[in-house]
Image (cartoon, rainbow, N blue to C red; front, side, top):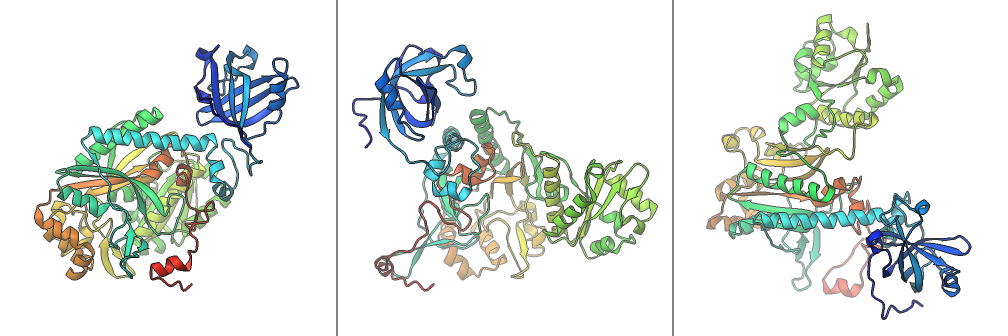
Length: 593
């Protein structure tokens, strides 16, 4: 049985004590991190979320108290009354905040005993993630996990303060809403009182935040849960958090500027990192041409170089045919890699690009007086010279080529660029490179459905000068859309919205909705647009991704208190689970699995 804490009041958290408290009588409470018995003296490291504090039990001072301390085991919950004393100089521990002092115990109460946990409660644990998630309440005791969630709290607080100062109102939107399928699969919630009908959990507050602009609130924000029933990976969860916002009477630059301000403030106040603003802006097409990605990592170079005009009539048919068929030939100059990569490593890069549908990768190793390659015999001396000049080749370089349809070339070389950076150790977690990618295509062509679909969502406004191409050349229409990218990860995105009902109806028609379908799905929005709609735009940050990058983690699971695993289940609670027949009957549902 645990002992009562009646009459005891904690005076300090463990990590809050320092030399200034020497001589004070204190009451501290927490978990026993470890106990060290040195004969007549026992040291207990007491841990709470603020840090670790060393507590000393001396048999010469109190034999009975010492014997009680001998029963302490890891993760026992303790309350200790004692006096703060200075450590001897040779025992000072500079690795912890409280390393100059310790507490000489005068009284010990064991508030709760603990079985031996399935893993050590320590930083940087290499325990299997499934075990960590099964015992998440123990995993969350680890100091590094607690730091992650404290950082999350801090950034959320900064966000609320910042957007409030900028005139935004925090307004909640519904969790139970109407199905308007336009992206990922939705989670359905059956209605008990309206049999056969379903709510969905929202993929985002998109329509409601636009309606708030119609309602005249001018500036809205919300830190909100969103739900998508999609295949998972490291930076996806079935339920995730957005920092969501919308603004009236603004243009693209207004939205970018206010959100740069938030990021600048968050990094300064939460991490002590000073960011330069404005962030770099890159049009979508330039990002694709230079980096093969619409979310390029700017911490290193290794840019793509277009060689199509140099090789369209060359004797190497792999290259010339790709250009003649409407594709391209592009290359990356892996500076110095010709010297450090073995033939086996180069062959592994050839296999790597095949993952991204490339048929292969041609290559040239540039040496002082010769070129090593199987393809140079297909080119004239002038063609080789032009290629080497274009990629700025020098002795020791490895030139990597991919020829195919543009999208395959972008994907393969964009990923190869990242793989080279990993192998060359160019990715530094404490370096933060931000940019905005702008002017996205409004539409993209769906090869399966043989029709144009909205690249972002159907409420995105086309650029004014491209409206003329809506009927004649959809592939040419750019959007007033923008993504914020940090170190190769999209952390937020948005657009200026359509606010004219006629234009919105035209976009719905162009992406294949009949007028009836558009009104069935989005009728309440189209109806609202009849009554005076301000020009408006906004964006949403992937809050989990932002915190993941700020915390230097590789998975959003490490910055979410109780996340799901790959198959969208929770190892701790065993959700999802079956429910009883009574509940199903109330919902008028039969399960046939």
